[in-house]
Amino acid sequence: GVNKRSFVPSVEMSDCMFEVTERKTRGQEGFLVIFRAQNPDDFYWWNVGGWRNTKHGLEKKGSQGNAILHHVPGSVETDRDYRLRVVVRGRRLRCWLDGDLIHDICDATFTTGSVGLGTWNTSVIYREPKLVELDQLGDASRASFEKKGTFGTTLAAGVKAWQASSPTQSLPPRALLR
Image (cartoon, rainbow, N blue to C red; front, side, top):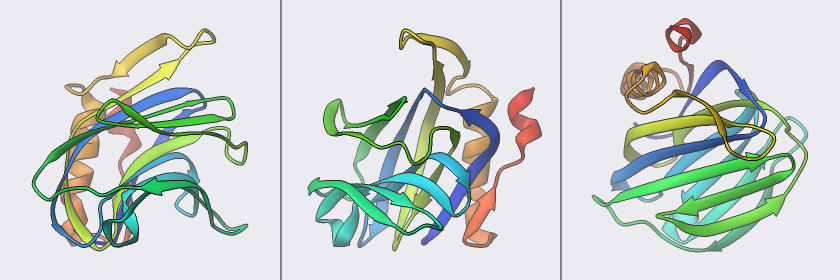
């Protein structure tokens, strides 16, 4: 769908890695990876192929105002897979596109939160989501939300449900805790 966001509630993390494969199927924009979401109004998002598919930007959305924290020129092609990775550790926020580091900044507005996906003026297919909490050394300490596990299944089901949903949707938390 277009202009949609889906959040995974009850997956509260501070230091984590969130990866997903995304493919734009049509539209003027790219896709959104949401992280450290406090609620449907306060979060960071990585806008890949935003601004009419001319930039990649790391943004802060919130009740205290919105801000572009960092942006670089960039676009995404229609019908091509992209692997996105977001790693948050303390105040440091890093984003990779197909293995290339795009953003590396520090911001302490949101220190914990959930994750999600979104679209703006485009249609996107999401596949193979993976969420891993990081330990104090930065290594994976818990990989319970692997792409073949309930996290990926639940997030994928939520994304499919966007077609008939309101612009902001929460995914059922119980399904994640099986």
